[in-house]
Length: 313
Ligand SMILES: [Mg+2]
Image (tube, rainbow, N blue to C red; front, top):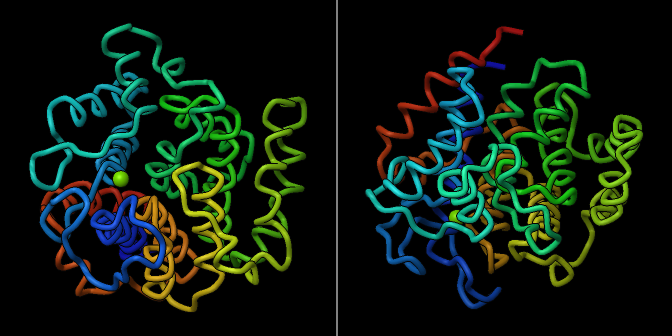
Protein backbone atom coordinates (compact mmCIF):
# COMPACT_ATOMS: atom_id res chain seq x y z
CA UNK A 1 0.00 0.00 0.00
CA UNK A 2 1.20 3.46 -0.85
CA UNK A 3 1.07 6.47 1.49
CA UNK A 4 -1.40 8.33 -0.75
CA UNK A 5 -3.80 5.37 -0.57
CA UNK A 6 -3.67 5.28 3.24
CA UNK A 7 -4.19 9.05 3.33
CA UNK A 8 -7.19 8.66 1.07
CA UNK A 9 -8.75 5.95 3.23
CA UNK A 10 -8.44 8.06 6.37
CA UNK A 11 -9.56 11.29 4.69
CA UNK A 12 -12.53 9.54 3.16
CA UNK A 13 -13.61 8.52 6.67
CA UNK A 14 -13.41 12.14 7.84
CA UNK A 15 -15.33 13.36 4.78
CA UNK A 16 -18.10 10.80 5.45
CA UNK A 17 -18.26 11.93 9.07
CA UNK A 18 -18.49 15.63 8.06
CA UNK A 19 -21.12 15.01 5.38
CA UNK A 20 -23.25 13.15 7.92
CA UNK A 21 -22.96 15.54 10.89
CA UNK A 22 -25.60 18.05 9.67
CA UNK A 23 -28.26 15.35 9.20
CA UNK A 24 -27.48 13.12 12.17
CA UNK A 25 -30.75 11.81 13.73
CA UNK A 26 -32.83 13.03 10.73
CA UNK A 27 -35.45 10.68 9.33
CA UNK A 28 -34.71 8.87 6.08
CA UNK A 29 -35.95 10.70 2.97
CA UNK A 30 -36.71 13.89 4.92
CA UNK A 31 -33.60 15.45 3.28
CA UNK A 32 -31.07 14.81 0.52
CA UNK A 33 -27.36 15.45 1.01
CA UNK A 34 -24.59 15.53 -1.58
CA UNK A 35 -22.51 18.44 -0.30
CA UNK A 36 -21.01 19.88 2.89
CA UNK A 37 -23.66 21.82 4.77
CA UNK A 38 -24.80 22.85 8.26
CA UNK A 39 -27.58 21.31 10.37
CA UNK A 40 -28.13 19.18 13.48
CA UNK A 41 -25.18 20.34 15.60
CA UNK A 42 -25.09 23.92 14.18
CA UNK A 43 -21.44 23.52 13.31
CA UNK A 44 -19.88 25.18 10.23
CA UNK A 45 -20.01 23.09 7.04
CA UNK A 46 -17.16 20.59 6.92
CA UNK A 47 -17.13 20.02 10.69
CA UNK A 48 -16.29 16.48 11.66
CA UNK A 49 -17.43 14.84 14.89
CA UNK A 50 -16.45 12.39 17.62
CA UNK A 51 -15.85 9.66 15.04
CA UNK A 52 -12.80 11.55 13.80
CA UNK A 53 -11.92 13.04 17.19
CA UNK A 54 -11.54 9.49 18.57
CA UNK A 55 -9.70 8.31 15.45
CA UNK A 56 -6.93 10.92 15.61
CA UNK A 57 -5.73 9.89 19.10
CA UNK A 58 -5.68 6.25 17.96
CA UNK A 59 -3.48 7.24 15.02
CA UNK A 60 -1.16 9.05 17.41
CA UNK A 61 -1.12 6.09 19.78
CA UNK A 62 -0.27 3.62 17.00
CA UNK A 63 2.46 5.91 15.66
CA UNK A 64 4.21 6.08 19.02
CA UNK A 65 3.52 2.51 20.26
CA UNK A 66 2.12 3.93 23.45
CA UNK A 67 0.00 2.16 26.10
CA UNK A 68 -3.76 1.86 26.43
CA UNK A 69 -3.56 4.29 29.37
CA UNK A 70 -1.90 6.79 27.05
CA UNK A 71 -4.77 6.40 24.59
CA UNK A 72 -7.41 6.79 27.31
CA UNK A 73 -5.68 10.01 28.43
CA UNK A 74 -5.86 11.29 24.85
CA UNK A 75 -9.58 10.43 24.68
CA UNK A 76 -10.06 12.31 27.96
CA UNK A 77 -8.17 15.28 26.50
CA UNK A 78 -10.73 15.26 23.72
CA UNK A 79 -13.82 14.89 25.90
CA UNK A 80 -12.86 17.27 28.68
CA UNK A 81 -10.34 19.60 27.02
CA UNK A 82 -11.58 19.82 23.42
CA UNK A 83 -8.35 18.56 21.86
CA UNK A 84 -8.66 16.82 18.46
CA UNK A 85 -11.66 18.94 17.46
CA UNK A 86 -12.46 20.88 14.27
CA UNK A 87 -13.50 24.13 15.97
CA UNK A 88 -12.38 23.83 19.58
CA UNK A 89 -15.59 22.19 20.83
CA UNK A 90 -16.26 18.50 21.60
CA UNK A 91 -19.83 17.63 20.61
CA UNK A 92 -21.98 14.54 20.22
CA UNK A 93 -20.05 12.06 22.39
CA UNK A 94 -22.01 8.84 22.95
CA UNK A 95 -22.96 7.68 26.45
CA UNK A 96 -20.94 4.47 26.34
CA UNK A 97 -17.73 6.27 25.42
CA UNK A 98 -18.33 8.98 28.02
CA UNK A 99 -18.98 6.36 30.71
CA UNK A 100 -15.79 4.47 29.81
CA UNK A 101 -13.72 7.65 30.02
CA UNK A 102 -15.22 8.46 33.42
CA UNK A 103 -14.40 4.90 34.52
CA UNK A 104 -10.80 5.54 33.60
CA UNK A 105 -10.30 9.13 34.75
CA UNK A 106 -12.58 9.28 37.82
CA UNK A 107 -12.99 5.67 39.00
CA UNK A 108 -9.43 4.64 38.01
CA UNK A 109 -10.43 1.34 36.38
CA UNK A 110 -7.69 -0.43 34.37
CA UNK A 111 -7.97 0.73 30.74
CA UNK A 112 -9.08 -2.64 29.40
CA UNK A 113 -11.91 -2.84 31.95
CA UNK A 114 -13.40 0.59 31.25
CA UNK A 115 -15.76 -0.50 28.47
CA UNK A 116 -19.38 -1.27 29.33
CA UNK A 117 -19.97 -5.06 29.03
CA UNK A 118 -23.78 -4.85 28.99
CA UNK A 119 -25.94 -5.77 26.02
CA UNK A 120 -27.45 -2.27 25.96
CA UNK A 121 -23.98 -0.84 25.26
CA UNK A 122 -23.69 -2.03 21.68
CA UNK A 123 -23.59 1.28 19.87
CA UNK A 124 -21.08 1.96 17.11
CA UNK A 125 -18.81 4.12 19.29
CA UNK A 126 -15.81 1.77 19.13
CA UNK A 127 -16.28 0.74 15.51
CA UNK A 128 -16.18 4.34 14.32
CA UNK A 129 -12.59 4.97 15.45
CA UNK A 130 -10.84 1.69 14.61
CA UNK A 131 -9.90 1.85 10.91
CA UNK A 132 -6.29 2.94 11.61
CA UNK A 133 -5.78 -0.27 13.59
CA UNK A 134 -6.63 -2.39 10.52
CA UNK A 135 -4.21 -0.33 8.42
CA UNK A 136 -1.54 -0.83 11.08
CA UNK A 137 -2.20 -4.60 11.00
CA UNK A 138 -2.41 -4.92 7.20
CA UNK A 139 0.81 -6.95 7.06
CA UNK A 140 0.14 -9.01 10.20
CA UNK A 141 -0.39 -12.57 8.95
CA UNK A 142 -1.37 -14.12 12.29
CA UNK A 143 -5.12 -13.76 12.71
CA UNK A 144 -5.04 -14.49 16.43
CA UNK A 145 -2.64 -11.57 16.97
CA UNK A 146 -4.94 -9.31 14.94
CA UNK A 147 -8.07 -10.40 16.81
CA UNK A 148 -6.40 -9.94 20.22
CA UNK A 149 -5.55 -6.32 19.40
CA UNK A 150 -8.95 -5.70 17.82
CA UNK A 151 -10.59 -7.01 21.02
CA UNK A 152 -8.42 -4.90 23.29
CA UNK A 153 -8.76 -1.65 21.36
CA UNK A 154 -12.55 -2.15 21.29
CA UNK A 155 -12.77 -3.02 25.00
CA UNK A 156 -11.49 0.39 26.07
CA UNK A 157 -15.03 1.66 25.55
CA UNK A 158 -17.20 -1.30 24.45
CA UNK A 159 -16.82 -4.69 26.12
CA UNK A 160 -19.94 -6.62 25.11
CA UNK A 161 -18.95 -9.52 22.79
CA UNK A 162 -21.31 -8.19 20.07
CA UNK A 163 -19.33 -4.96 19.82
CA UNK A 164 -16.10 -6.93 19.82
CA UNK A 165 -17.33 -9.24 17.05
CA UNK A 166 -18.47 -6.18 15.04
CA UNK A 167 -14.91 -4.85 15.28
CA UNK A 168 -13.52 -8.22 14.15
CA UNK A 169 -15.77 -8.22 11.10
CA UNK A 170 -15.12 -4.58 10.15
CA UNK A 171 -11.36 -4.75 10.65
CA UNK A 172 -10.94 -8.17 9.05
CA UNK A 173 -12.85 -6.91 5.99
CA UNK A 174 -10.44 -3.98 5.77
CA UNK A 175 -7.55 -6.41 6.19
CA UNK A 176 -8.82 -8.47 3.27
CA UNK A 177 -9.44 -5.44 1.05
CA UNK A 178 -5.97 -4.06 1.71
CA UNK A 179 -4.55 -7.44 0.75
CA UNK A 180 -6.24 -7.47 -2.65
CA UNK A 181 -9.48 -9.30 -1.87
CA UNK A 182 -12.86 -7.93 -3.03
CA UNK A 183 -15.56 -7.06 -0.51
CA UNK A 184 -17.78 -9.83 -1.89
CA UNK A 185 -15.15 -12.52 -1.46
CA UNK A 186 -14.16 -11.21 1.96
CA UNK A 187 -17.80 -11.58 3.06
CA UNK A 188 -17.87 -15.11 1.62
CA UNK A 189 -14.79 -16.21 3.56
CA UNK A 190 -15.10 -14.38 6.86
CA UNK A 191 -17.66 -16.50 8.74
CA UNK A 192 -15.54 -19.65 8.41
CA UNK A 193 -12.31 -17.88 9.18
CA UNK A 194 -13.72 -16.23 12.29
CA UNK A 195 -15.41 -19.43 13.44
CA UNK A 196 -12.06 -21.24 13.28
CA UNK A 197 -10.07 -18.44 14.88
CA UNK A 198 -12.54 -18.03 17.74
CA UNK A 199 -12.63 -21.69 18.81
CA UNK A 200 -13.20 -21.78 22.57
CA UNK A 201 -14.51 -18.22 22.73
CA UNK A 202 -18.15 -19.22 22.96
CA UNK A 203 -19.38 -15.82 24.11
CA UNK A 204 -18.04 -14.26 20.91
CA UNK A 205 -18.89 -17.15 18.57
CA UNK A 206 -22.57 -17.00 19.41
CA UNK A 207 -22.66 -13.30 18.47
CA UNK A 208 -21.74 -14.07 14.85
CA UNK A 209 -25.38 -14.98 14.19
CA UNK A 210 -26.44 -11.34 14.72
CA UNK A 211 -24.45 -10.40 11.61
CA UNK A 212 -25.62 -13.36 9.50
CA UNK A 213 -27.54 -11.27 6.93
CA UNK A 214 -24.46 -9.46 5.65
CA UNK A 215 -22.77 -12.74 4.77
CA UNK A 216 -25.62 -13.99 2.58
CA UNK A 217 -24.75 -14.11 -1.15
CA UNK A 218 -27.75 -11.90 -2.02
CA UNK A 219 -27.20 -9.31 0.73
CA UNK A 220 -26.58 -6.55 -1.84
CA UNK A 221 -30.10 -7.02 -3.22
CA UNK A 222 -31.72 -6.34 0.16
CA UNK A 223 -34.31 -3.60 -0.28
CA UNK A 224 -33.28 -0.16 1.01
CA UNK A 225 -36.32 -0.09 3.29
CA UNK A 226 -35.04 -3.27 5.00
CA UNK A 227 -31.67 -1.66 5.79
CA UNK A 228 -31.68 -0.08 9.25
CA UNK A 229 -29.42 2.91 9.86
CA UNK A 230 -29.38 3.33 13.64
CA UNK A 231 -26.34 3.63 15.87
CA UNK A 232 -26.70 -0.01 16.97
CA UNK A 233 -23.44 -1.59 15.93
CA UNK A 234 -25.12 -4.34 13.88
CA UNK A 235 -27.29 -1.85 11.96
CA UNK A 236 -24.31 0.42 11.28
CA UNK A 237 -22.07 -2.33 9.96
CA UNK A 238 -24.78 -3.81 7.75
CA UNK A 239 -25.87 -0.41 6.38
CA UNK A 240 -22.27 0.53 5.54
CA UNK A 241 -21.49 -2.79 3.87
CA UNK A 242 -24.74 -2.65 1.90
CA UNK A 243 -23.92 0.89 0.71
CA UNK A 244 -20.52 -0.20 -0.61
CA UNK A 245 -21.93 -3.31 -2.30
CA UNK A 246 -24.49 -1.13 -4.08
CA UNK A 247 -22.05 1.47 -5.44
CA UNK A 248 -19.33 1.63 -8.03
CA UNK A 249 -17.39 4.57 -6.56
CA UNK A 250 -16.36 5.93 -3.16
CA UNK A 251 -18.46 9.09 -3.63
CA UNK A 252 -21.47 7.05 -4.73
CA UNK A 253 -21.25 4.81 -1.66
CA UNK A 254 -20.99 7.80 0.68
CA UNK A 255 -24.02 9.54 -0.86
CA UNK A 256 -26.04 6.35 -0.56
CA UNK A 257 -25.00 5.96 3.09
CA UNK A 258 -25.46 9.55 4.23
CA UNK A 259 -29.00 9.59 2.86
CA UNK A 260 -30.10 6.57 4.91
CA UNK A 261 -30.89 8.82 7.89
CA UNK A 262 -30.39 8.45 11.68
CA UNK A 263 -26.72 7.74 12.50
CA UNK A 264 -25.57 9.36 9.29
CA UNK A 265 -22.10 10.53 10.33
CA UNK A 266 -20.82 7.18 11.55
CA UNK A 267 -22.49 5.18 8.78
CA UNK A 268 -21.15 7.52 6.11
CA UNK A 269 -17.70 7.47 7.70
CA UNK A 270 -17.49 3.67 7.88
CA UNK A 271 -18.93 3.38 4.38
CA UNK A 272 -16.34 5.82 3.02
CA UNK A 273 -13.56 3.90 4.73
CA UNK A 274 -14.68 0.53 3.36
CA UNK A 275 -15.31 1.95 -0.12
CA UNK A 276 -11.83 3.50 -0.20
CA UNK A 277 -10.25 0.18 0.78
CA UNK A 278 -12.31 -1.59 -1.90
CA UNK A 279 -11.38 1.02 -4.56
CA UNK A 280 -7.71 1.73 -3.87
CA UNK A 281 -7.22 3.44 -7.24
CA UNK A 282 -10.17 5.81 -6.70
CA UNK A 283 -10.17 8.77 -4.30
CA UNK A 284 -12.70 10.75 -2.30
CA UNK A 285 -14.22 13.88 -3.86
CA UNK A 286 -11.63 16.72 -3.75
CA UNK A 287 -14.31 19.35 -3.30
CA UNK A 288 -15.65 17.71 -0.15
CA UNK A 289 -12.15 17.13 1.18
CA UNK A 290 -11.14 20.76 0.62
CA UNK A 291 -14.11 21.93 2.72
CA UNK A 292 -13.12 19.98 5.84
CA UNK A 293 -12.63 22.14 8.92
CA UNK A 294 -9.20 22.30 10.58
CA UNK A 295 -7.33 20.55 7.78
CA UNK A 296 -3.92 21.33 9.40
CA UNK A 297 -4.86 19.24 12.45
CA UNK A 298 -6.01 16.33 10.24
CA UNK A 299 -2.80 16.56 8.19
CA UNK A 300 -0.70 16.57 11.34
CA UNK A 301 -1.91 13.06 12.24
CA UNK A 302 -2.88 11.48 8.93
CA UNK A 303 0.15 12.34 6.79
CA UNK A 304 2.93 10.96 9.03
CA UNK A 305 0.86 7.87 9.83
CA UNK A 306 0.28 7.16 6.13
CA UNK A 307 3.99 7.58 5.46
CA UNK A 308 4.96 5.27 8.31
CA UNK A 309 2.47 2.52 7.43
CA UNK A 310 3.13 2.63 3.68
CA UNK A 311 4.99 -0.17 1.98
CA UNK A 312 6.05 -0.59 -1.61
CA UNK A 313 4.60 -4.07 -1.95
MG1 LIG B 1 -20.32 11.38 15.39
